[in-house]
Length: 391
Image (cartoon, rainbow, N blue to C red; front, side, top):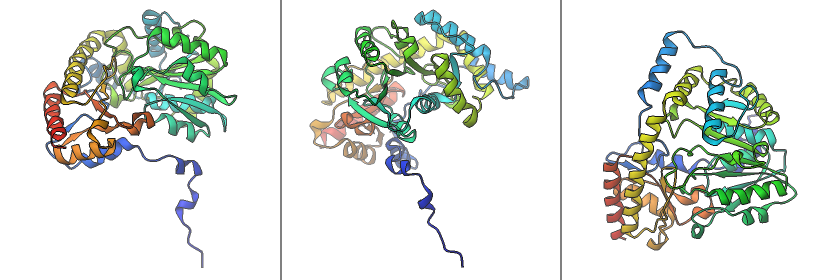
């Protein structure tokens, strides 16, 4: 008789080091609830602008349903090259230095797997997007988490990065404007970090997907800094600025050698991004500016509404200068972030995300996404206020 096996014995060890996404837990809790207001999802509440959808429909109607180059449509890469030359005065060769990916998450995974050897360390500035640390672990690397402090408006300093670097450090990952805090980085801050990158001969992975949602100051593209173009893997996409989350459309910009390595993995795992989404991205770059600016203006109004409302309730909230997240401190309530978020959901039907999900520095904070209507934000603030008053 053949002996039975336990399927779990075949699971890779690295899987034991990565817990399920804490964000999904709250989405699962709310799936069957009614009268729920969500400030949890990091997704625009806008429908993709019609002219972008129309371009995709037209493309399908004309039979454009094939594979594309592994690198993506040349027409799209040319538009991206023009876009970065025009906006940031940094040029990328369309044929060799741009890779179209299926979302920024895929771009992140490709970047890390392309550069990380087993045992290499990658510094992750937290609070951060939940995929950074798992992606490093899956690649056999060692994540070194570095907490940006609330007293510095969640901005990391060059000295803090320098102190975390060892002879095993391969790269640093930063994200600005930041998910979950909404913090941004000034050019002077980034210049000082660039000096550290050169000093220690390492790479920067710069996730700038919220670039167009910068409300105060001017966004500085990291690779546009002197000497950084060849030391940066820049990740960006269409989900946030153009309300194209379901299209899973993004890109990586980097030197040819790095793009070639990323493309090799992409070639064998994803092959190429969907052609229909790529057509939509071309239209977005060519004719989407007015809609981007319109949405950003509305997010800015919501930002002021939610930050002012949270502070009035007594939940101290620093001023986020980008993205669409507020990150109020809730430690004054005596509850942990998990307790606060779960009770707020169960008792008052408002979805928020505990800050500790994004790293230890987020403990004692709550992520509130204001990618929701002003009416929903006002109602959510009233419910949060009632919850806090009743504690």
